[in-house]
Each structure stands twice: as structure tokens, then as C-alpha cells.
Length: 266
Image (tube, rainbow, N blue to C red; front, top):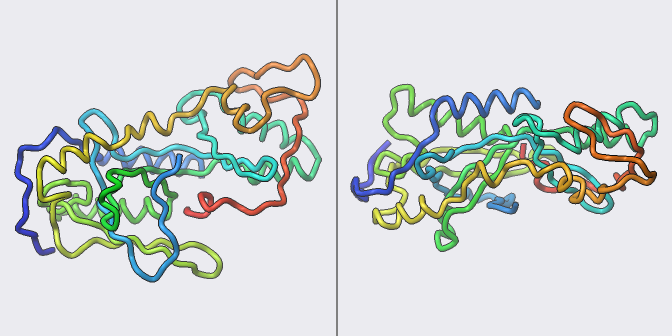
């Protein structure tokens, strides 16, 4: 990999790249569970983006479980609380629906299943004025980014999360194959800093959202409210405690619509 002569120098804000443990933890969470941000479109031309490290003490890569809950005419994304030891309304509702022979409930169990999701912060080289933006994706993209990181660890000096002269941009191509979205992630052939100016690099790192805070699960009542299921059709119902299932029969959502674009990324 050739090198760019530009170097912002060492006078940077304290920054953090993901550790091997971050990737292992994220992979473990994704395997265990089998807001709006950057979203590429299907097109022949590759996007060029740069992974942005986090401020010291924050995580530049996070993993979480996401339920895609169809209700009425919309699909509501809900971060699952179970991996972090919090109660999860979609999970409880799935458990309730699993014991019901109603075909709509059975369909809900299938479609509300939590899926592994991951998030990083990037700079889109086509729109640098937008500054740091969150990119949420599934296992397909995560696995390819992990390969790039492993290559850096296994003898390579360049790292896609390095904001300095040993970092590099990545090419992101999204295309359709047999009706499914396929992502291709490739490294740029030339290393270069996140920006030539150290002040700009530091400004972008400082402006990067706190991913851990952004993707925390909402409390139980907020999850219900987001789904329009804050109360049961009959009296005497209260939110179940952790590990319990919802006893009341809630109104079934309209399951006739298609999947949201967010659901297809992995």
C-alpha cells in the first residue's frame, strides 16, 4: 500500500481505535442473536468513506440486537435490551405470540426476531461537509470490515480506523444480486490521514456521536409506546418483569407490508 505524503502530525486529540476485544465482543453478540444515519444506495460507482475513531473512553464500534417490528403500515426499529440485561417488550410479545395458534401472531414471531446490528462513524468523502455520520449495518458488512482490521493486525501497518498517516479510506459498493443487497468492501490502495489538517481531524473525532449512548435500549414503557401497544385491550394488565411474558392479547399489526430498507442490509 503506497503512502500519501500528507500527515496531520502528532498534535491530535486523544483518540481510540477498536481493540481486538471489541471485534470479538461484537462478533459474539452477533452470533448469539443470529436513528437515521448514512445509507448507501444501489449504484455502479463505489462510495469512498473513512472510518472515524472515537474519543478516548468511547467505543468506535458497537454491536447490538435490533427488532424490526411491523405494526400497522410501518416498521418500527427497537433496540433489544436483553443482551445488556434489560427487559425487552418485543421479546416478551414474541413469547406470548409463540403460544398462540393465530397465524398473524405466528407471522409476528418470525418477523420480529432480533437481528445483529453494528455501527461505526464515518466521513463520506463525497459529502465531507456533513461531518461525522453514523453507519449502521449487518453482519455482511461487519465481516468484511473485520477482515480489513485483521489484515492490519497480522503484519500490516495500515489500519482503517487510524486517523493518521497509517490509515486509509474504504470503498463501499452496494449492488443487487438475485433480489438481495450485496455489499463489497475494499481498501483504498493509498494510505492517507483522515484529513491533512490536524485541527480538522480532531474536530471530526470530537464531533463523532457516542455510539454506546445512541444505541441503548429504550425503557420498557417507551418500547410499548413506540409500537402503539402501551395498554392491553382488557383491564388488569401491567408490564411484565424480566423473564416473564405478556399475558394479554395485544392488537396484531398489519403484516401485509414489505420490509424496510434497514432490514435488508445484513
